[in-house]
Image (tube, rainbow, N blue to C red):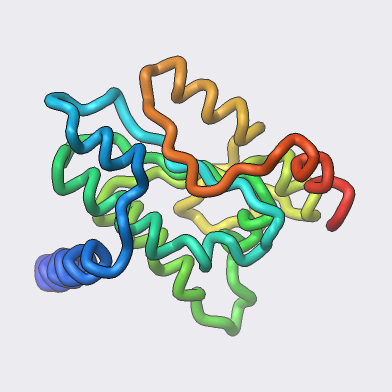
Amino acid sequence: MTRWLKILLVSLVSFSQAWALSNYSLHPDVERILMQMSPPAGVVIEVESLSPDAMSEHSQLIQTQVDALKQRYADLDVVIVSHGRELVEFTKPESSAAPSDVLQTFETMTKVQGVTVHVCGVVAGWQGKTDQDFVDFVDVSASGEAQINDYKALGYDVVVIERLSDKERQQLNSQQ
């Protein structure tokens, strides 16, 4: 039974990869990485937004980037760091609610493609969330920015899907 489930998941991912690559363009930084003769140490995909819906808005675009990177470099370490209001989309659904499409998409990326998802503990706190509020496949980092800097120090390339300006970043804590 488990074997058939894995086969089904791999088939679904393969189908979604083909569909996604035909409907979403590659980020210029991902295109540059794909042209390299050898892979970087890893890739960080960064999302930092004032919109609590940004992960839903970007999920297929992110999936396309992950698919392309993993197709070219199967063993490449890919991580996603969410450190804006969008991180609320990674909270556990209410007990009676089914997981959202965005949660299912990112959980599949973690389980099938080995992607790690981090959210920022500082911003989570500003949004009234604790470590226990997030789904199991998400790692709550002390600081999203520090997490990205740690990966940079290890030689990871950063692909920015969305990043706040300094002025917008000041609004992150003030508008809850």
